[in-house]
Amino acid sequence: MFWPVLLVVLVVDVITKAIAERALMRGIPHEVLGSAVQLRLVYNPGAAFGLNLGSESRWIFAALTLVALVILARLYRSTRAGDAARATALALVCAGATGNLIDRVRSFFGVVDFIDVGIGTSRWPTFNVADMAVSIGAGLLAWVLWQEDQSIQASVPAVAPVGVPASASGGEPGDLV
Image 1 (spheres, rainbow, N blue to C red):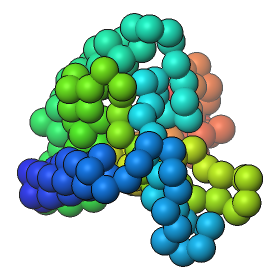
Image 2 (cartoon, rainbow, N blue to C red):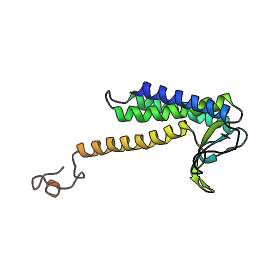
Image 3 (cartoon, one colour):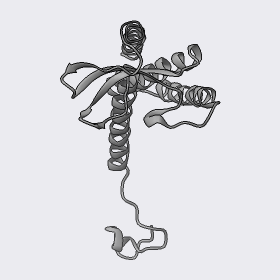
């Protein structure tokens, strides 16, 4: 599940960004669903929500992305066979991170963003397919890891603190745990 999802999302991200760069003029909106959904080419030299660390943002965020990908690779290696939800979540995050990393490396301008949603002047920051993959994947991964934690919590028997009589923890009177 991991590799097909990663490759499909990455290819769709790269292709849609290339189309956006060829078909859209920078900053000029093209309505898709009225003004609620527009295509608007912008370049983001920083990170999510326009976070920018100055002239070296591109390289700082590229390095942070590489660190994140190493961590995600470790999570993937620890994924049980057949755990489709975890594999899918990791694939989405990895694909999105890789898609935006490609932009950071190839373009001085930054990451290509082109999907603009909002009402009137209240707009969400412009984003791309990679951003959607990271957001959906991160949400799914948080849910999967929370489920795993809940499963571990449920399988661990309750133990009375050391020195507390077992009768207080449900054992025989006079027993120490």
